[in-house]
Image (cartoon, rainbow, N blue to C red; front, side):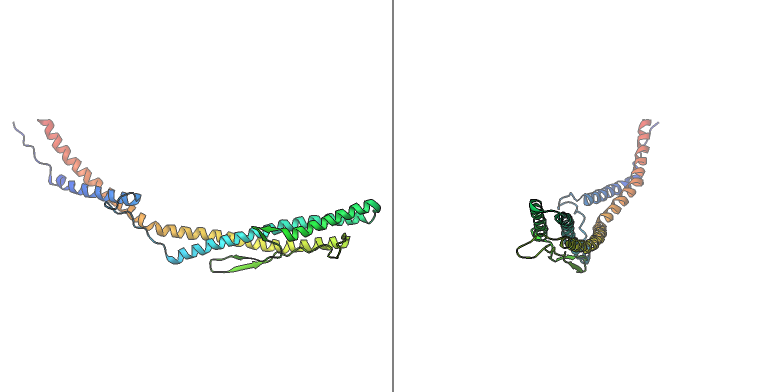
Length: 257
């Protein structure tokens, strides 16, 4: 008995170039996604440029965040200065009260302390700075929106307790007035600080959304190549199965020899 080994069926033969083409397509898609191929080979995924307006808005928002954060820092510095000023003014009230019952050397010692407290309050008003720039009595402007909106605030200055010449120890009433004035300035500053912090939170939320939108625009090219890769992989599976089946038929004939 003799056997004739027939050639691989037409379907099996036809699937060979199909598999080669699909594999090549899959390789190209994967290479484009990785972006690590040379120019002579498959070109990497071409970058997708996000809308110019969106990029400009993002840049403006980032600038506004920097400006608003700087204003927040300045107002926080002013708040600390006011806290220290109120503490010194209250200390002055206590010393001035003790001065009423003192005499002689004791009175002179209290007077020296009162003058030192007054000098401390004056120093806070004159020497409180942020980034080398005076804070109290100096305006600060924050760009609180990507549309150019801005807010300008001025932390109030701290006046001297006793402006007489020569400087005399302050009285109870003068230190009390100083404490009230500084407290009022701190309250106004706290309102401005809260407004700036709220604006900063809105800006930070806005920039996250803008970055996400730009990321989605840039991912369009990658998504396209992922679809191409999936399509090539799906197409290769049945072609490979058909060829394998044809090869198995030939192998079965060889086993009969």
